[in-house]
Amino acid sequence: MTSEKLLLVGAGLSGAVIGRTLAEAGHRVTVIDARAHVGGNCHTERDPATGVMVHVYGPHIFHTDDAGVWDYVNRFARFVPYKNQVKTTTGGSVYSLPINLHTINQFFGRTLRPEEAAAFIEEQADTSIENPASFEDQALRFVGRDLYEAFLKGYTMKQWGCAPSELPASILKRLPVRFTYDDNYFFHRFQGMPEDGYTTMITRILEHPNITVLLDTPFEPGMPHDFHHVFYAGPLDGWFGYDKGRLGYRTLDFERFCEQGEWQGCAVMNYGDVEVPWTRITEHKYFAPWERHRGTVCYREYSREAEPGDTPYYPVRLLAEKALLGDYTARATGAERVTFVGRLGTYRYLDMDVTIREAMDTAAAFLAARQEKKAMPAFVHAPL
Ligand SMILES: Cc1cc2nc3c(=O)[nH]c(=O)nc-3n(C[C@H](O)[C@H](O)[C@H](O)COP(=O)(O)OP(=O)(O)OC[C@H]3O[C@@H](n4cnc5c(N)ncnc54)[C@H](O)[C@@H]3O)c2cc1C
Image (cartoon, rainbow, N blue to C red):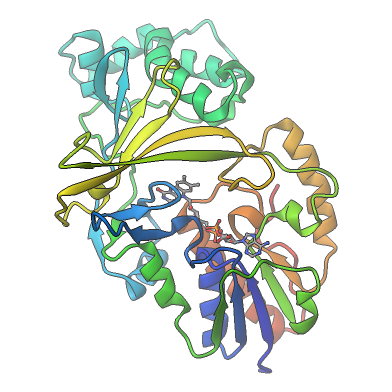
């Protein structure tokens, strides 16, 4: 195999995993990132004043059913078991999420057992809605008005910046209710937190003699000339200079505050009332419950539409974006010597485990294409 010069744009999980796999296969890899650190949106750093490990771009909990991905991350970090137990404040009370038997019994002042609760929720559900078209219809059909208004409506409005009646029903795919006292947010077999944070893990992934990392280095259109192939984890529309307009993203503003002791007593507290402008407060020391700190660092989180220059967090993917996305995707598909990867490159929300799986598959596809002397496609995972 000929050793090629490869450019990876983005030192997040996508760039790191693809880069590592191809470096191990003997290629010479350069990873660039516009930011001053590796790790992308998973970046964690210790707050110098309190020693708390802070999830700088919002809370990240690792969870997966993919044993290959779990083995992969455990090569580079020690994972400590972690259960994500979210609370919500709504209508002047604190409840457990996702809506479970405890939430139902507390909210309605009942002592229902699982089957009774299931029958009770079925009575609450608005069965007159036969074909739910919107998120609101779907929620009313599943859980009825009381639970919808307390737990889903306000939070969703704040997160998406529009009425739930304007959002597609597909956002709420399944019944958002459990009829047991299980309050573990995720169902996945493997769940944990890297003991020394995600940035340490991603730094270790990037530590290889064939990898050069350049930080504070934004991608420039002339760069690909010096490389045989580019893997681009930056924004798809950014590759084209946003010439047809910008794909919509939600961004987050974090209002950071520090206190002594414990502030809210849990890692994540959602706020369901629409009158409260923030969506949630995260208290970062609870993401590492095995550590002890006297001080505490909290983020009050606000969601809004991303403007040019903001960090793009969540792809909106509503109807207007899909048309524009179709246009950029069609043009990107014709591009040569570049593969668009990851969250921004394919304009999809991806959890970390899916990002890693896709990155492993992309690197494998590249090695196979070279072996078989075939062209490497612009997308291994298409945006649409
Ligand atoms: C608020 C929030 C919470 C999340 N929580 C979880 C969670 O609990 N569990 C979970 O599994 N997943 C979670 N995720 C998803 C997780 O963040 C992603 O799976 C992961 O970050 C995707 O990695 P990536 O490398 O594709 O993208 P990114 O992490 O976004 O990395 C892309 C990198 O490319 C760089 N870049 C972009 N454009 C350029 C350019 N032009 N030039 C140079 N560099 C550039 C960026 O600076 C960035 O570092 C969360 C996401 C968000 C937004």
